[in-house]
Length: 472
Image (cartoon, rainbow, N blue to C red):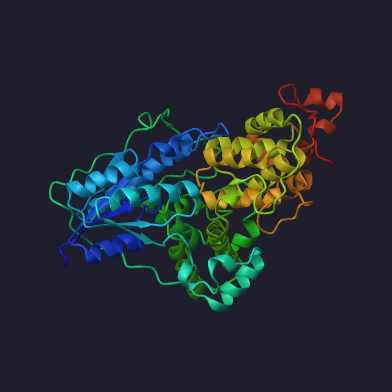
């Protein structure tokens, strides 16, 4: 042992497994000080008048931190939990526990990197080094076959070269035990009310599954999806479904908070392929992990351009004169287009929406309603339980035609999509109960029903002639 005391600053890496900063700190330090800060800036109102973190994701976060603390306690350690700005809290802890170095994982979005810079500056005044690690991607940045600035702007080109010339590193070993300073004051996870929220007691019974935060739940979900249900076997065929827990992996929320390592998932795929066979489905799941990498690397390449209306293409999409009114209806799930309304209501009630739903809802907002795409991205930032900046803003920029692989004149045909992926209207019927009596696929176009049919199905509670009904 070196006699060092190393502070591990947890952020979006709330796990024990495959966590290089923790493993390295345990290896190099005589004692380790694990810390998590509930930064009040995580819960502020944005310039778009949305909340940076909604109540559903806030509760998930508290569960993630609580589970991390419990896991550390099982290793004979603990987690210091504080509420406040890291650049204020970490220097105090460094002084109190005579810390010699601080470890953390790099982020890529501007707000997160600004906090890192503020912490680094505060520590520098104490002559303490903030050591940066890279641990959020499947492929390590140093293993890419091109420098960040030369990463292709088209995903398929990126994918082909990555698959040919790069490899995924093995996961780092998890520590079995380690020492913390004597009499370390750990702290407790703040309540929802202390974070400014009304506590959420029950999950909406219509939710695709009950999302509970933490590494323990993440690993249990991964094991279930691969080995108990064997659902990964049909992933490619079911991933565009809308109902049920196993049409897709649902790993995204845990990956977003770092409760589940992308590399851990990758090597679980490889283990599954070895024991039960590879397929288009296991490859398709791998591609979703690769897309996550791609957007993070794009953020490194283009930085704040993803937070500008013109993106990195230079021209913003057309916007309607009354876009604020349209946006309010879209947020409430009251556009009068059932497939869109169902998806937004699911998001509002559960914090989750399928990938198919996200693409359609985003396309409809930007292409049909002609609303500023950044408003939609900011709303998703508030509501999504699996929000991460690169994925969210990268995908919205793509839909808006100002990001990667832009197709400026392509947008989703909502009615065609609805009939293909919800052919009997079961999904819409679940989330738009005002239309429950409408049979079959007729539910997707209530404005085409006759007056007698509208009366028969009692559509008095639903707008049946939306001003922006999509073409058939």
